[in-house]
Length: 219
Length: 270
Ligand SMILES: Nc1ncnc2c1ncn2[C@@H]1O[C@H](COP(=O)(O)OP(=O)(O)OP(=O)(O)O)[C@@H](O)[C@H]1O
Ligand SMILES: [Mg+2]
Image 1: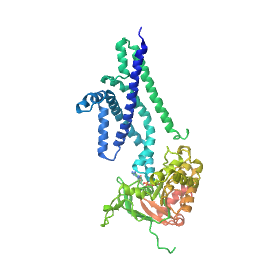
Image 2: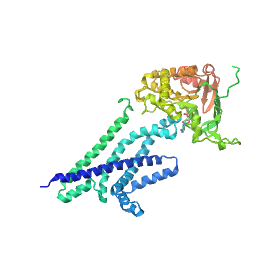
Image 3: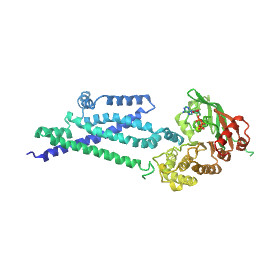
Image 4: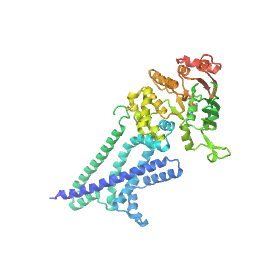
């Protein structure tokens, strides 16, 4: 008979790493999404080109390759990262590239009328973006951001390949030591699912709060 | 009046504007005096909206000059005002400064849906004029009072009727105290029973302020009461202009007569 409690503890420790990676990866992805998404809408050609290059590159190459670059190739250029840093970097940059298109699309979806009202009220470009366009666009971004965050959560599993002991890594360890596949992988199946559920609940709540009053019913 | 003749507040000097191949305005010139209430009427597509949008800097012009308060709108002196008097296209900063003199109310209100009524009104004074929240809110409440909406200060735009939205939009534009106010068919998106409440606000505004107002409208009865001068446009040209009594009772031009006949036939009051 196997004493599972120790092994489950191991998986839970891995779960913490997964949560950590997800949170930090999402934070970086969010920042990158806004920088690159707004960069693509810039009046300056250089900024647009830079943002486009970033987006196309990170969407066009796999997260797996990006992670290996971050962890194994960057040190050759003198940047040595811990596995966690490499993981956050690769995940954040990769998902941020997808998020950038979400930001761009949402900003463009705000009608001309809102821009014109801002001109008539003599707001600057920055004020217009900050106070009028982005607050409305953000609400439109949220459902897709939710998908992106869940994608990022699922993608964290690849970091086990650079020996970061996340939940998937620990599940493999447990499997190797106990010979049982069902218990460790059943456990992480449930844990991943619960984490994804937590993300969508969180975003849904945020969405509801921000949408308050917009439809004239809830206030 | 025997004071020296005042300078026009708006001088439009042979401006032209095309959209692609289609020339909307072809060398249009007109002046507006300070405090004047002007009604722009004319058939659909005659360029009325385009003129207002050009004054609000929402469209550019292809050629010609516009002076607001004696100052070029779309041009500025070369080398920051150096001697030769040459002009270059206006910078964003110049436009920003010029826009302080002008406000616009849109056909579809264009309120900010994510901001409460009072925030819609206080936003621009706080951001562009450095007003404190307290100052901006005091002024906003006065304006809300004037448009009869003081009880809706905390409402969200989506909770308001079209007429209420438009009255808020008027208050929002007034909050910046522009010298010139542009109104583009501000009642044409409203249900008929809501038109009057907006027109009442505009009447009050016309009586109580010396703001220069340009109004594009299909409400001929209102144009008659509101305006000091009526301009009839067709195909981007001023066909006829004059006091409302003359234009509406004794139009000289055939095109004006035809237009007014059609409008009356369509059920609009004159
Ligand atoms: N952004 C644009 N692109 C192309 N054509 C335009 C644009 N804006 C206006 N036009 C055209 O210019 C002409 C004048 O338009 P404008 O909106 O100024 O007319 P209007 O007198 O306000 O008409 P209405 O009474 O229907 O509002 C129209 O034929 C219109 O189709
Ligand atoms: Mg029009």
